[in-house]
Amino acid sequence: MAKTNFIELGDGEQIPILYEDRTALAIDKPPGWMLVPVSWQKTHRNLHAAILSSIEARDFWARSRNVKFLKHVHRLDAETSGILLMVKSPGAVHPFGDLFEARQVEKRYLVAVDGVPKSDEWTCRLPLEPDPNQIGRVRVNSREGKEAITRFNVLQRKEHTALLEAFPLTGRTHQIRIHAAESGCPVQGDPMYGARKPAWGEEPEPMGLRSVYLSYQDPFSRRQVWIRAPEEEFLKTFGFTLVKPTLPPRPVAPVKGQKAG
Image 1 (cartoon, rainbow, N blue to C red):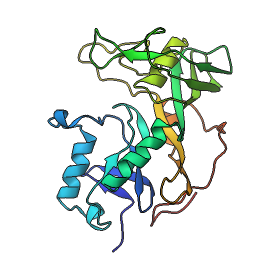
Image 2 (cartoon, rainbow, N blue to C red):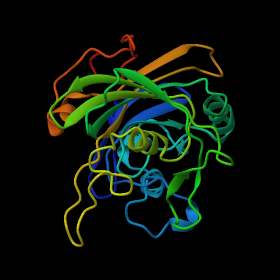
Image 3 (spheres, rainbow, N blue to C red):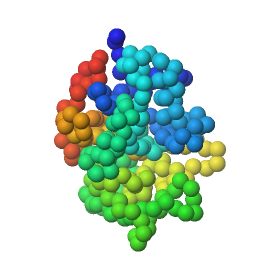
Image 4 (cartoon, rainbow, N blue to C red):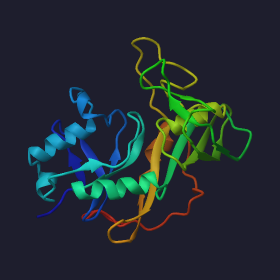
């Protein structure tokens, strides 16, 4: 049976599949979708719940793959777009989750920021903890916070904005967003840590954070996997042009039915 190269949700929204093998599947997560605990099932923007509902309905994309289980093994913030890795069986959740916990996954993000960094590259090591005064917010705590490390490189500068690439070496909640803000260049459109908070009733701006590269060694086959997400639309949205990343591009196995390149 021919397979689609996207997941189609119940409302007709199509989410591109960037990579797939017997164990894992990576999607290009659109902004605006949350990855939330089961206790938040009532939200209509719960991506995990929407995908499970589509699987249970035996929609064509799932039926053609005989997919009966799909679960994310890391998280992206609701307004962050890009590569989200999922596994196809309960037995793969912990082995893949362990890769992220052990920092054995290479990650690269594009970051559109307000402000112009003076340095071409730097590493932010500010420890982070949940903010006890606001649910869902994270803050810096140099004494009791958990270790958080992000490496930044400047790719392009404009008069008041810049394009960075970020390599998070740890995976704390909101890590890149806080480290960018603490470095004097908050992520554009960030409603929580950004330079400009949207007014009441105002349409929120897109957030300038996108996961564009993921690499890991498959814990079962021991094969190295490289996954990339398209960058053009993100760069166009924030007024930047294509640039050569610091991390050299590597071949990515295409989804069946897609052309490589």
